[in-house]
Each structure stands twice: as C-alpha cells, then as structure tokens.
Image (cartoon, rainbow, N blue to C red; front, side, top):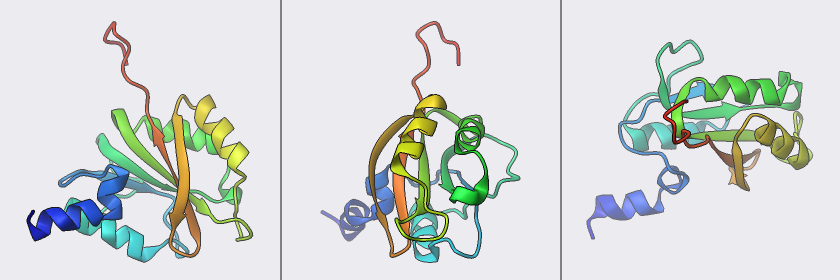
Length: 144
C-alpha cells in the first residue's frame, strides 16, 4: 500500500466521507471553530472551504452550530438546499459543558424534522462534537 493510501485511510476527513476535489461549504464559521480540523479537511480535499456566500451546489457541508445560533431545524433545512442528494452534512456543536452546547435530543429531533438521517456522534478536538447527517436519496420517480 502506498504512503498516500495509508494517509487517506488514517485521515479523519476520509473516514467521515470527504473526498478529494470536493467542494465543501462551511456554515457558521467563527473564531471558536477547530482550525486544525478545518485545515485537515482542506488538505484532504485539496481545496479551500467555500463560505456561506457560495452560490453553486456543494458536495458537502461543514456546519458549525451553537445553541445561540438560532433554530437548528431551519439551519439544517437551509443546508440541505445547498448540496446534492445523498451529500454529507457534518454538524459540529460545542461539547457538553461548553458555551453554546446543543443537547443530543435537540440535534436528533432537528435532523429528523429536516429530513436528514443522523449518525453516531464523535469528538473533534477538545471543544467540538460532530455528527454525520445524510441527505435522503432521491425518490424513484426522479423528483428531488
């Protein structure tokens, strides 16, 4: 196995489902985000993350969300409109006990209401938790 393949398998970005040359839109960026994680994703995809003003369809969304950021369901619905079907939406929220913490039950309810399938939560650095959310597959009739 090549060194590049070894790196890809050990990369958190790869394990999360990001792919080389993807356009990843970042929503909710602020000074408190995990810069190392952002840089890992950018290095893995080979592109800079695009911001909230990006006006084309993205391959994935990196969504930083804090309790005071508004309505999570609305934010998730908006995020689904920015990506293709079956795209990765990675929701990052402050860990338990940190300012802006969001209850797991609130995340699950908001994701389901927004039509997303929540995955298992996991840690990103010292301050953030993450949860993979999958957009639904297109209906067989071809409607989106």
